[in-house]
Length: 242
Image (cartoon, rainbow, N blue to C red; front, side, top):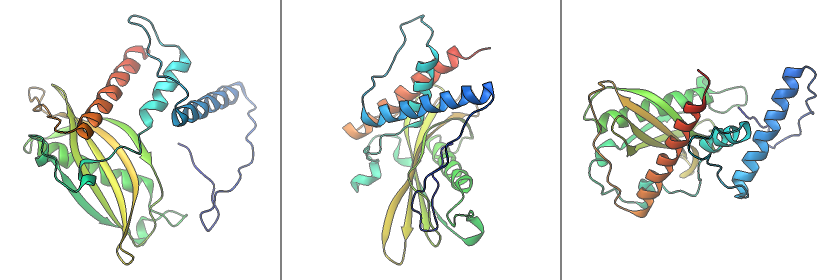
């Protein structure tokens, strides 16, 4: 996890340089520097996606790059509900779930903002409802979390809007896209705070989700984004030591 030091007004503050001492600390420090550099290259688009040739094992730098890419999420990508109209593709409409949670004092951390763990529990509950709705109420189990990006903290006295929609299916799994916005009801303002993908598998192995039909370029772009993420995840699992 990466954190930013802030003062009481939320302004970023400098952090004292960490000096590694043991061999293990040196190794982790170098890996942290490499991850940070990969994130910078991802953000600027200066590094192509390294895809090993068939049968070729990925080196450590490539593996780290794939890990960072899986955690990233294109912020410019629009969600279907951002267009002001319900998606028209067959099957996915029934999976749309919108829940609202108030941010109360007991859910705040020592910074005075919503606990990240509380928000993650809310989005998993919402996304699982979306997955079950797509399967007409059949139970599901969480199989993967992709591209979870905390965009900004959620301040107190806000209503948290969590919206989920199934955007990708395979023969044995379905992936839900989640968007979170914080509403200031007094000022009438909304700000996006989190985006993520959650993949679920039917609890019944014999239950196969219906295919998702992409009715627009935006929906096709999201489908291909998930397809790419799942492909890289399979690559990581194949290269993991047994």
